[in-house]
Image (cartoon, rainbow, N blue to C red):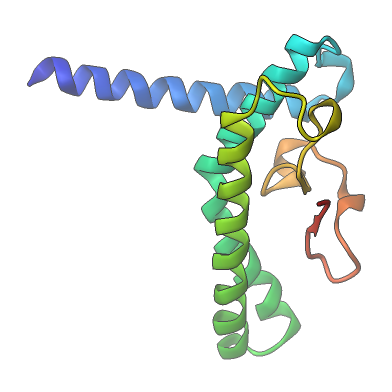
Length: 140
């Protein structure tokens, strides 16, 4: 019983450490990223895991965005629906990146979604990946 609990805590700590290390690498830009194929694979794996575990952040983010555009009730309903859609998409893209991290698909290990993470101002993506309304763009 105690071993299972320790193992669970260790796994949770490992997941948090991986997500934080990916966020740290993205925050400081390209000078800290390895441009080799192995470095790009690591970045794709980290991006995928980050999107799988933090994709639900899209729900409150979209509620907040729609709330500012309209009244609170409409913002909550429309933003909630949009947020669930974006969260599902982000987690699916994250799962795809996690499973296919050794394969250079799309070309050169580029992200499928822009911005590559749900909170670009926290994880260091460049803001031009948003359209004029502040919505993220898909690059399919």
